[in-house]
Length: 242
Ligand SMILES: Nc1nc2c(c(=O)[nH]1)N[C@H]1C(S)=C(S)[C@@H](COP(=O)(O)O)O[C@H]1N2
Ligand SMILES: [Mo]
Image 1 (spheres, rainbow, N blue to C red):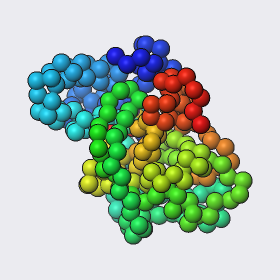
Image 2 (image 1 turned 90 degrees about the horizontal axis):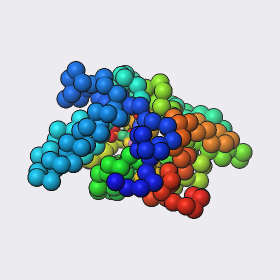
Image 3 (image 1 turned 135 degrees about the vertical axis):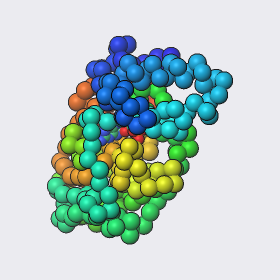
Image 4 (image 1 turned 30 degrees about the horizontal axis):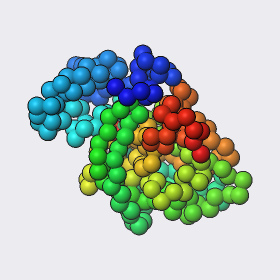
């Protein structure tokens, strides 16, 4: 067990109550995650030694991913009704359709996905539009300092400083694992913040609002770090992050 890592019941800032998806779990789907998730992980942890590849397929989202949602259901959006609104401290607010986003230059990144609770998926391709390109197109006003992200699940939110948001490894992602992002992974569009823990990568992205100051997101209101650099935050490092 890693030390210094937030874990339920072991000094976590505040317990993460998330709903595990119904994908492949039938009636178990509405059980809150911490118990069931850890049960699954304990089971896989021992059995995975014997047959790692065979067992990964049993996980709700497959391929080593865990399904996370803070709401028990999320509406489905597709090319016909998906919208991403960019507003706040910008001179050209705009609403993008999926076709609009697909028509823009795409960037593909391949990095490890790391959840703050310990699971990790190596070498995962994400592809989409650089957030910096959307911010430039919107014309960020001089007094702006941060960006807030909202989601069509109606509950989740995230934030970045403007400097973080302009990094080339932060995408408004349309593809993951070289496929269109499916509903369970936050499709059709999710945020992808490569250098930070995966909770920064808001699923079901529907709003990008440029703000003056950082407004902490859903998990950050519950004790997790706003600056969630992998390996350098959430109690894993004595130095303040910058
Ligand atoms: N809208 C929304 N985005 C979210 C979350 C969530 O609950 N709701 N969970 C976050 C966390 S903690 C993780 S680890 C990843 C999980 O992504 P996945 O379900 O594709 O594995 O999504 C992040 N983005
Ligand atoms: Mo996570």
